[in-house]
Amino acid sequence: MRRCLAAVAALVLFATACSAPAAVQQPRLGESAFVYVENTDVITDWDPATSYSNEIVALQNVYETLTLWNPITEKSVPRLATAWRSTADGRSWTFTLRQGVTFHTGRAMDAVAVKQSIERTMATKAGAYYIWDAVSSIRIDDPYTITFALRYPVPLDVVASAAYAGYIYDTRAAPDLKKWFAEGRDAGTGPYTVSSWKQGARDELTLKAYDGYWGGWDGPHYRTVKFRVLPDPRQAWRQLLRGEVSFLYRLEPKLFARAENRPGLRTSERPSFQTAMLMFNTASGPMKDPRVRRAVQRAVDYRGVIRALGGGVLPHSGVVPEGLLGHVPGRAPRQDLAGAAELLREAGYGPHGRPLRLTLTYAEGDSDQQVLVDRLRRDLQSLNVTLQARAMPWPDQWELGKKRGQDIFVMYWWPDYADGYSWFGNVFHSGEPPVFNLAYLDDPTTDSLLDSLPELTVTDRATARQSFVRATRRVLDQQAAAAMPWVVNYRRAYLDSVQGYVDNPAYPDVVFVYDLRPSG
Image: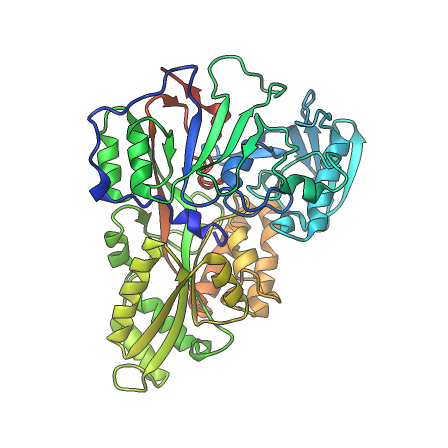
């Protein structure tokens, strides 16, 4: 997605770093912490209302949402809510809350606390607060029952499982809550609470078990979780082999193959919900001409890039990845340089026309995006098109993008909650300022089509699927607003003593440590 690109590019581990002992050392049972490696600072925002970056990997262990998205059933399951129901028109949702839950501050989690938490998040107008846009009011029915009235239907059980802005927290923890959070404190209900935070340190963040956790601590559990910052992926790999860290969340293909056969390691591989996108400037510059946009779409070497990245990414079809409502199969794009040349000729450019210069920005340090950019530059050069590419830190790239400062904007997207509307509603719906609509698409026909999707998702899923197909064609074919080169393929490696790990693509790179079972 948009904000964690430094984390997305992390731990691209090089095969030259593979010298290691034959057997991986394992920590002794009862003495080990679960150690998660990041390549950059873990915490950028402590406030659970506005958090929208790398700290998701920690905060999902500290805070909880009303529901949790299950990647096996592809449905919401209970978390802080034990049951829910909606009216037939999808405009009213009632949740029954789990009893006996306390915040780390000691306050009981009840309907009042939930209402106050969500209303504060909505009022911040920051981060992913917009997931609650449909909510017009929240009513307390009894101490453990709460009803949401909606302005328009949305699948609120799925919204309530969001990776961001769905957290329930104690709004009474301090008079100045924003300042209180910023000092490294938390007010969640999750299994872990903050033990220490040392900004800029190698062992930046340590969590400890919350003894009052509603799930209990019977049986083996990790009672300590450490988040270690190791910018050098080779160092991270060596520490994994020595048993000093527990989990690496991204490996390059050759090293992943070695990890699969390394005694003392386990591996996990699954397609993610994270898509790479080239957003085309539809509002100004040479790409305002749809023929130029279509030409660049056809110039992308989709298959060549996927081969070059060796299994770290997978072919993408449509806009929404497989596994979510909105995915459209059978649309994997292919390179067509002859077709690109013809479109450029029609626009007055191309091999026998005027030279064309395009600007592109992408994430600094992201080697996968670098491969894409290098190949696109080469192929466009053969079409008399010069691509000026600039690698930038994500915050700087995003700020420039919001000012329409480039022709092509390369970025990742994954959903705030597990629904295909996240791509269309956030990325391709018109809006000013553009925020994440970095194609600057402003098309009333597209907007009208997209506005129907949330209600159809609740009331008529068959029609919703057809509408997603139409929206995909509108955005990619008729408007040619973007190119979708791949879906990220998650490849993890972790110690053999870590048991029970399940990769949940709705929560990118999160390990739910409480669910793990350490063994000797």
